Image 1 (cartoon, protein in one colour):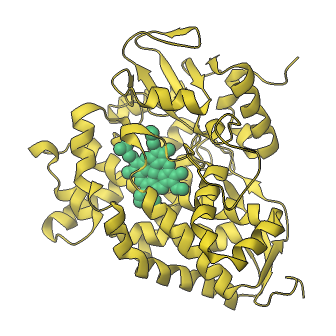
Image 2 (cartoon, rainbow, N blue to C red):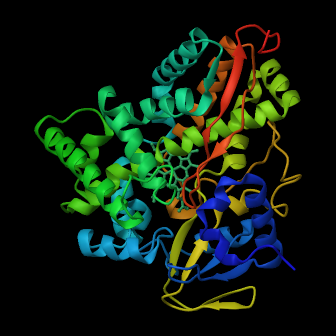
Length: 420
Ligand code: HEM
């Protein structure tokens, strides 16, 4: 008798308990590789959790459309989104677009995110990393590594690429946490239902980015916000929902995810002191470590696809109009795809994880994210000698983007024990 049912995938509390989450993912992959889920308050969908199966579906974007159902939301939230914003996801970002329209929209910023252009940002990213680790070094030897350090550094990098002023960063961080944490009572605005909370958060995003658009049209700059504000995908004017969706995906996808991999990567090193020492002794391993930290944490737990034609997978026939959840979180620990999948190995190679997705929607910011993580840990090992846990890690309760939201640590500049 199993402790799980497929509908648990929607339960935010599951994501707050890492051991249980990994047991659930293992059960899905082994027992229910194509599971049917109908969680209370949500429209039904299929869940695909094996690495090879997700790749198979991601290779067929004309059959498995990215929109209109982009992520798993309660029906109440989808309905209020449709009533107020005209789309069930509330915004219309790249991740909900398909076909030529998606290609044209992606092309607006694709150049900016190419590895050769991201490398030009390396010096400034290193400066940010040095400053954030430097602040940590100057502090008292104890902090919450998530809320005091890791949340802020990728935010600074993403906001400077986007062109958002440092004084607006705290507001953006709150809005992002509110967007992804709507189901978490610790995050939701007091006195509001989940649907009311989501509407209030979206309205605040709209107001903020409306001001940015007006400013960049009047005063274009060398930043991603100007590309979005003035862009004409395929020669056509962008709708307000598309423009806002674009800002929101770059602003939100750009930092919470990377922060989750930095915090989770740090915790994995603390939990595996030998790997920590090996990395400290071999800085050349930082690249493979960064990729492993992303696989290990898989901050984006899923995206949804909408079926356009009949398609069979392991004896199950998906019908047009069905929805399929791609459970990236489960695929990144699939033992069929990775040797010793449940171990954190800083030198894992190859490491074809699906934490960045796959196919035409594969993460646009992947090179930026990797470079950020590499720069951070490089600086960390330069400046901080030892680190240990000073309390329990607390995970966000959220089924879409989630990770550690609190990691109390003690550290020291010297290589002696952190408590010395
Ligand atoms: C560890 C960090 C990150 C993870 C795990 C991550 C994960 C993902 C995933 C799973 C997707 C959807 C892929 C699919 O549907 O197949 C995605 C798309 C996207 N990501 Fe990331 N991401 C990260 C960092 C970033 C950064 C730093 C940026 C930019 C500043 C970014 C921008 C985007 C954009 C714009 C898309 C939409 C691409 C499209 O639909 O064409 N991401 N990301």
